[in-house]
Length: 170
Length: 170
DNA sequence: AATCAAATGTTATATTATAACATCCGCTAG
DNA sequence: CTAGCGGATGTTATAATATAACATTTGATT
Ligand SMILES: [Zn+2]
Ligand SMILES: [Zn+2]
Ligand SMILES: [Zn+2]
Ligand SMILES: [Zn+2]
Image (cartoon, rainbow over all chains, first blue to last red; front, side, top):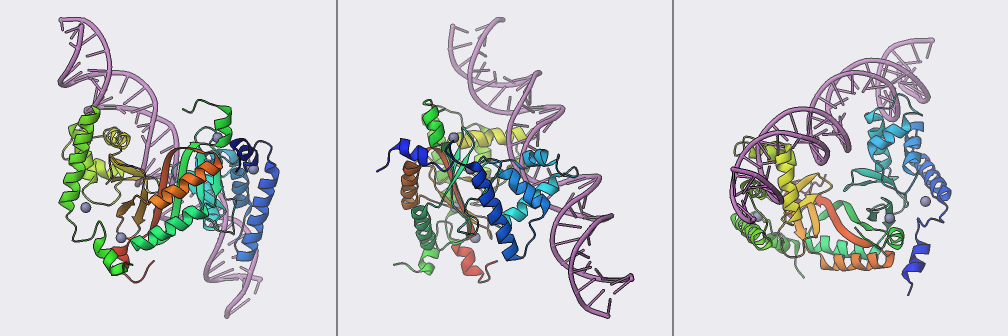
C-alpha cells in the first residue's frame, strides 16, 4: 500500500526528475531503432523529435512549426506534418487525438499503445502500460468479434502533481 | 460460449436491426431528458440530433451543415457547432475524438462514457459499456493518483459485419 | 412598455491538415 | 560518366475543422 504522497514522489515526471535523461534516452532509442529498421532519422525529423521531447506536454503541430523556424528557415506546415507522420509510423511519438497534439513515446520499441493520462492543468501526458486495462479490452474485442487495428485510450483530468498543488479542482 | 456467427446476428447494428426504433428511442429519450432538465431541445437541435441518428456512422460537422441547409437556410458553421455543443453537454451524442466526428449516444441518461468500436470499413461506431475495462481503468487512476474528468476510449478496426463480408482485412 | 436571458443570425477569422507539383541529392545500372 | 530512380524536402495553394465577436430575435417577467 502506497500513499498518494509517495506516489507523487515516484511520479515519472516529478519535478525532481532528470529530464535530460528522458530526452537522451528517447533520442538514443530513436536513433537506434531507425538504424535497425533502415529508415532515416534525418536532421529535420531529429529536430522535431527533440522539440517534442522538450517537455512531457502535448505539443501542437503549428507550435512545433514556430519553434523549428529558427533552425529551418524553409519550414512550412508540410515540413512538420511529414516529420510527425514519420515519427508516428516509427512509433516514436503519440498523437493525442483529443487534443490534436503530439507527445513523445516513452516506450518506443516496446508495446506502443498505452493509456494516456492528460492533465488539464499542466498539459503533461503520462503514458501507462495499464496491462489490466489492455487485457480487459482484448476480451471485449473478442466478445464483439472486432478486429483491432489501433487504439486511442485518452483520459483527461488532474495529475497528481497538480492535485497536490491546487486543492480547488476546476 | 458463443460463436462469432451468433455474435454477428446479435450485433446491435446487424443489417436486420430495426433502425427506426433506434431513432425513435433516441429522440424520445432526448426529449424526455431535456424536459426533466429544463433545457430546450429546440428545432435546430432536434434536427441535428435526427441527422446524426440517420445512421450509426460517425458524421462530420460540415456534413451535418450540408444536410441541414435544406431545412435551415441560414445554417452556418456556428449553427451546427452550437447544436453539437448542446447535445454533447446533455450527453446525447459522442464526439469521436480520433475522427473529429460525432455519433448518437445509445445510453443517454445512463453512464455516458463508453468504449467506442469504430469500423474503418463501414464507419459505424458501436458503443459498449465495457464494465471490466472501466473497472481496470479506475484502478489505474487510483494507482496514478489521477483525478478523472473525462475519458475517450476509441478503438479502430473492422467490425464483425465487415469482417464477415470481406476476408481481406486491409 | 421595459428588461432580461437564451437562442440564433451573421461576418470574419483562427486553427489544423493535405494536395500537388517542383527540386534536390545520393545511389546505382548501364 | 551519366541517366535514371526513389526518398526527402521545398513551395504554393487550398481544404477541413472550429471559434470569436457582435447583432438580432424571441418569449418570459416585471
Ligand atoms: Zn522527463
Ligand atoms: Zn498536471
Ligand atoms: Zn440502428
Ligand atoms: Zn464495419
